[in-house]
Length: 482
Image (tube, rainbow, N blue to C red; front, side, top):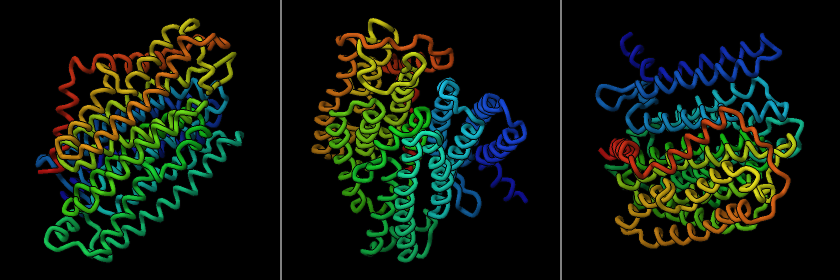
């Protein structure tokens, strides 16, 4: 009985979230009308409680497994879960006004977000290939529905279908890789795989299995060449859904990728390092050049997120503690930058109608100077201009690469960052120097204003007190290399 209780205690955030999500689903069904706002507020409360539980669940030994070794809790999982829950809560909070104005505010949306978040938390705590797949599919099934959430909109339906078909293909690759690993090692548990690889030379078939596993996970982080779904899905999905896709699921997928490669496949570091170096370089280059000709700001953000995935992968390619701590720090800063940018995109309306064109921002500095200033800061940070937080995110991962001897990879990162700066600065130029288009609607709502202000303060003043976040990232990374 004591074993069962310890199992339940470690999985308390996930169990609470699953139970609460089902209760909110029932509440929405039985209340029928006008339940959207109530369910959304309660969902935010649920996420807050889950965040407290995730932060508070600390094993006495610093690392503990439950459910027969399927589920793992340590300081790395805690750091990643806090990031995911913060991202989810804020993206859900800023979605309400947009959904109501587009008349698609229904109680199903917050419930889907909760189920997707449950899958993400399970992914982060996975300690077995079976648990990994279970978490991934729990998240993905909710995301497929969310992409096609605006069911009367052809673009939204198309984006949901594309995401589903390509996501199913990626899941197939992942499962095939997992089956090969099981076939050659005879186990699916991460610790057992690591022990087997440490004591024996990895057979050729296992390397192929690992390649398929990495391909399936690279799809989830939108790394090149598994990025083809990203621009269409980001553009077609409702804007709050795009904001959610760009932040929460990406952080969870990165945490899972880090865990898989440094944990069970840690002894095969030379084999997977080459793969990750290629994914990082290709993502940075494509993210930099493909965004240059975009006219839709959501498509531009899609290519931007592909580029940012490349920068984060540089930290993973290094494969040591310094690289992983740089990656975790990068994800935290990426969260704030994207939250702020998508907050502005959600506020882009002309006469009550949502607009997405970069040209719609023309002359924004004259019609809404504060909004223009905030977006300019977010763009400068994404371009990596000091002393904003985005500069330090890139600095940490590039320094880790240089220190580990990956000088060419760091050089590709710096050059692609310089190219990417062009399209970020083009948005600033459109806002400050182009003739004003139709003025954007002014009121942006108190929730959105608070989130934008919080993101702005974090990005501008991060360099004054970086130690809490840097220390947290280093501590979380050190758990993987004990």
